[in-house]
Structure formats: C-alpha cells, structure tokens
Length: 265
Image 1 (spheres, rainbow, N blue to C red):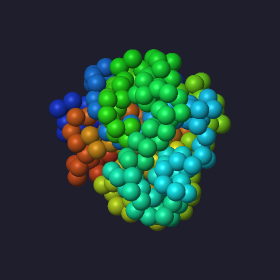
Image 2: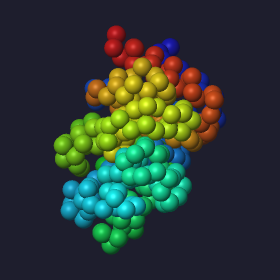
Image 3: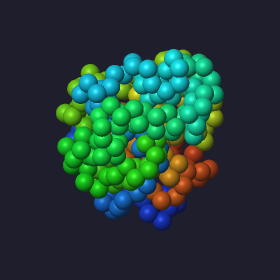
Image 4: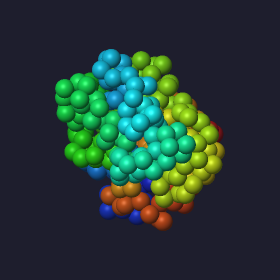
C-alpha cells in the first residue's frame, strides 16, 4: 500500500481522491461523487474573479471592500473584515483575517461590473471551458461550491498549466500577497507570517495540514473535510463527507508528508 492508497481508510462514510503527477492521475473512491467542499471554494472563485480582471471588467487594485481596501486585499484576506461580516475588525493591511465575507463582497463587485450573477459568471467563464460539468456555486462565494474530484482535477490541471488565464496571472495568484502579515488559519491557530496568495493559501513555514510539502505549495482545505494542494507540478484532491476536526489534524499532515516523500523517491 502506498501513502496515497491509505487515504481510502480516512474515517468518513465517503472518500474520493486523486493524485496528479506529470499529467497522470491516480484515483480512489467515486471521483464523480458530488461533495460540498466548503472553503476549497475560494481558489476556484478567485480564479473566476481573476478572469474578470483579465477581461477588464474589474481591476485587482481598484477600491473594493472597506475604505482603503482593494480587490487584492479581499482575495488575500488582508482587508480587515471579519470571517462572516463585512464590518472591519482591523485596519486594512494590518492582519490576515480569514474571511468568507470578503469573498462574497468581491463576487458582488464582479457581478455588478459584468451584469451577471456571479454563479453564472463562474459557470460560463470557468466551469464550461474547463469541462467542470458537475460543479455549481450554490451558496456563499467563500464556501458554497459543490463539485467532484474529477472536476477539481480539471481545475488543478489548469492551475498547473494555465490555458484559461494567462500564466503570469496564475503566477501572481501563487505569489505571497502582503507578506509578513500575522494571521489565523481556522482550526490551526495563529502564525506570525500567515502566507497567502490570491485565493490560494501558501504553505510557507506553517506547520499544519500540508505537512512537509514544500514552502511554495499552494492550496486550501475546507471545514467539510476536504483539501486541494499543488506543488512542483503535482497536485492532490481529497474530498470526504466527514467534517474537519481533531481527526484530520495529524492525519492530513502525516498523509501529505508521506505522499510527498514517496514522490521524491
């Protein structure tokens, strides 16, 4: 049994996963099963927002959110608004405050600029071109995406080899934004340098769910028991129906570390 095979033993009623390496995909479980992926929604939504940037509907550094904030601040959790409120908790750019409300705000700005409801914009602009036929934003732009492992593999392929967005746009999304901000990763506590890109959490020197993935690894996890990571041309998608909790903290880190170690051998 490989480290990836062990994912099948995660304590959930349903587990589906895929490991993408050099274009080849290994899978386990029902990869067409639809899951609610919670905050793994954010990188996908950010991709749609950056499409609107490339199309000229909005600008990354235009005012957005509270006074002094920009769309970049909202996508990088640096606007100062709270997790579930558009009220400011800190001054703009002072603290990395993880915020679904900020993503909802950003999506509303794109909707107003494009004249389309954001879920429809995301469907036409991202899901259809990438063949993500079983994906739908059914709730919050911060945590309301329903999708499958198969569709997230399509998304991961796009991030690794951008065709929909320009490669420099994706590179910017995977580059630390407002580096050095202290912040909280839900479920894991505070980090002195809580590194984040645009939509994607960046591993940096955090000790958490990414385990021993390289510092440049990018991804996201969701409170519904889900995660996605990308590193050095490789990617992994893991979806369950068992909400994140104490069971996941050691298991995810250990599993990702073991998978990465095997990939290096």
